[in-house]
Amino acid sequence: MSGSDSSFTKSFITVLVVLGLVFVLLVVLSRLVTMKTADVSADPMVRTAVLERIKPMGQVKSGNLAELFRERSGAEIYGNVCASCHDTGSRGSPKKGDNAEWQKRMAQGQELMLQHALQGYNKMPARGGDDSLSDDDVKKAINHLLESVGVKDYFVLPKKEGEGEQTAAK
Image (cartoon, rainbow, N blue to C red):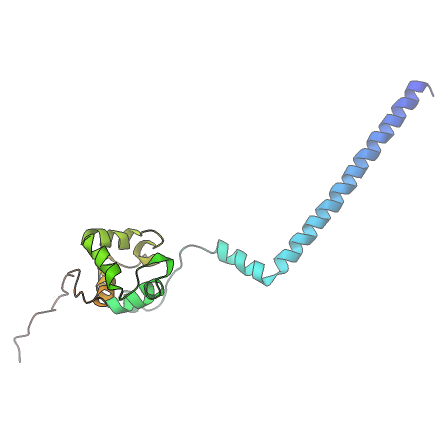
């Protein structure tokens, strides 16, 4: 074997050994990474958090259609949608019964108050986070909320058929 063949063989073997070591290192690293991933996915708290993040945005409501579309009172809407923030003042919301805060908002006008309730304002989501609420539902909830500071019927709502009419038959 000549000197150049010997030099080539040594270089070739060195390259093969280095490539082999890189391959072994990559295999070991990939095993370590997959072991860590497997341990994390087995953790029920991590699994719950992941499922919460990827759950669908909308949910289908099923059941009695009459119940889904029945008329709701302002107190009921407030209790189901608004109370969680406005009872405690969380997320910077004005508390129910805080006359000074509600007077400031009423001074800005009905239109702006309704716009904030319908479209959201600061940390308050649109319609309090319940997109199924109609504009009149939102007005009913605001009326209920403002009753706590002595304001009655801030928003005038359309009367339902037969409401306010006296029956002539007796």
